[in-house]
Image (cartoon, rainbow, N blue to C red):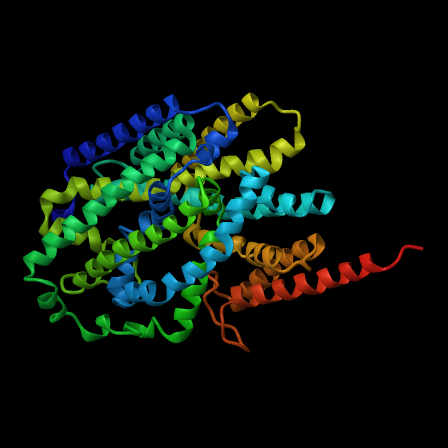
Length: 495
């Protein structure tokens, strides 16, 4: 960014200090109200209400993409993003939420599950195959979530260093914010995470809307702004035909995977009652829309002032550039909001990863482990995960880490046929569920390799859809075929 758009050192230090105080205060407050059990540490005793749940779900999902990538995407592709959310993603979200969420919650409560893998094992009544499904689900969940942790830790340092023009070094930003985060998680567990997510969500919400209202006022209103913007940025499919029918379908499909992600499944486990499920769904849709729409508007306003190559990294700086260009006094709140956006995802990923390792790997191997020892090890795992992540973030950059993260997101794909067919087809067997999950993964990544494009975003004949769609179709078919075979074998009379 040009020098005139950097934050001053004093402003940046103030924003970071305020943020760290908030994190540490909430961690201490949550610690004083916590119980020494895994269910409290990872799920807040399953007593979370809809408002807190909605905020932690939304802001865990959106992360730093809210302040950087989302506005940059709107800068390049226009207001199709808010339209996509409003007309397609909202109804799709409702369908998947109500197909899966009630089952997650009721069965999770019945079996006292903390991890998705536990739920799978209990659904199939134990045994070697059920345990293999639990291990498989735990493994793919970790393969999805570990790259997400690394990306968020790197994003902390990048946000601080970039917005201050290097006045605060990258390493200092990573270490300071990671330290505050890990103390909050260790002390407060999920209570600390979701309460900070709520506070951080409010901060982000206020900063986005206050800044936009001021910015729109400076330009004489939305009508005056839109009259100056190129028409293709206000239409569908937008510049570069980005929101064409195939892309629309594919983005809707990818978003529908949100509630297969382990951190989101745990946020359904933690709800206190069935009515909270319905209220949470409504609030999630409302909060998401009220974030996506204004951020999209920031992006298209940026087209009036900045000329960046389409889809370039510079595009992601549009929102902070606009704020610093027209509202220099708003720099510290901007940084505070950006930090909040990143940490709301990072803390959730770290805590979920700790729970996966403990519940799906350590405790099955050490069934006699006491609750107190398991809790201690869970907290140590949080520290280990963050320390390892910080060491990686401070070392030589991993080439194509963003691509690795995008590919890792596909690791949750096998959970869709596994859960949907298990919940809604009584003919599903444990062997069929495991086979379908494995086939989904193999076909998806094989086709990504064939497509030669690591993001998995190259349509492949004959249906001209993304590899993930073929993977899911193959997984569902495999689950059905293998389940029918094993049901046939078991129905034979014994000699």
